[in-house]
Amino acid sequence: MTTYLVAGFVIALANLLPAFAPPTWSILVYFVFKEHMNPALLVVLGVSCATLGRSGLALTFRKISPRLPRGYVTNLEQLGSRIKTDSKSTWGLLFLFFLSPISSAQLFEAAGIIRNIALRPLLMAFALGRVISYSFYVSSASALSSTSLGELIAREITSPAAIALQVALIVGLITLGNVKWKSEP
Image (cartoon, rainbow, N blue to C red):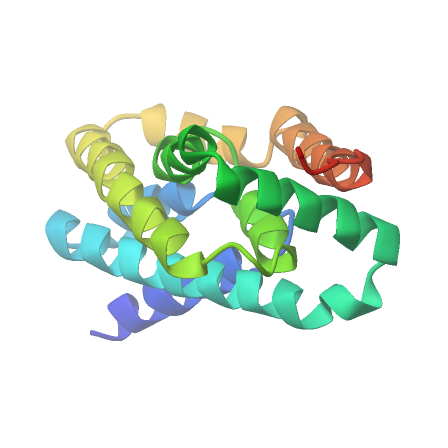
């Protein structure tokens, strides 16, 4: 039981961090390899704690947005207005949160800054998408836990490429907020 509490805490904390946290799938894989936890229970725990952490991240950015540069926040809010007025954009946003192959931290940071976007549908899309992806990762890790592939995965999580991807995503978030998203008439 203690191992599940530790796993849940680590997953929630990693998803609360704005950058440089290991991806949740890698934490799940770690616990499969090292602790041999129940795969189904680990997926449920992972989805729940990741969603809780991302919710906290978005709400934190919603709270600190008045302290961010006004022009940056205004640009993101104009983007939010464009998304809300176009149903294709709304569905595209939900799909992005559902099946995003990239780190979702910056997506939730931006969603938190954009006050006119409801977080609940994004969190639901995120959770549903993570049920699928985490199930794949955990079941694959369970099947491969007795091979040396686990060591390879553990090395790749902290690779320079993984760190560079996080830096690129942060730059992308900053760039997104500096685009002047003028509302359509």
